[in-house]
Length: 182
Image (cartoon, rainbow, N blue to C red; front, side, top):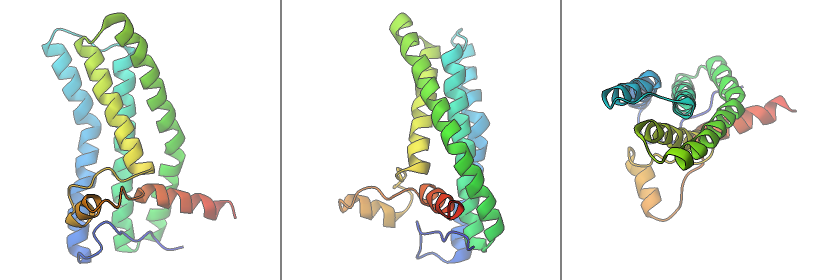
C-alpha cells in the first residue's frame, strides 16, 4: 500500500513542499484551541456567555480542525513515503467523518432556535461563526477544495473556470474505504 501522493503543488520540490505543508498542520493544530479561546474571550469582554449552541459550534469547528491537522500530516506522510502513517491517518479521518458531520448538523440545529428566539446576541454570532467554519472545513476536507488562494496553480485553475478540485482527503478516504471493502 502506498502513501497518497501530494498533488496540490506538484511542481515544487519535496523539501519545499514539505516545509510549506508543515506550516499548515501547525496552523490547523493551533486553531483547534485558539478559535474557541478567542470566542470565549470576546464573549467575556462583551459581558455575554456561551450557551449550548455556542459550545456545539466551537466543538464542531475544533473537531474539523483536528481532522484538518491530520489531513495535512497525511500529506506530509505521503511526501515522506511513510505509507503506514498515511494509512493510520486516513483511517482516523475516515472514522471521524460521520461524527464530525453529525456534530456539525447538531450545532446547526441548535443555532436555529437560538436565533429565532433571541436574534443575534454575541453568543449566537459566535455559535454561527464557529458552525459556518465547521461546515467550510467539512466541505474543504471531505468534498471540494475550497482553499484556492495559496497556490497559483490552484488559483489559476479556479479563475480559468475549471471549478473546484476534489478534496485530497476526501479522495484518500474514499480509496481507503474501497480497499477495506474488497
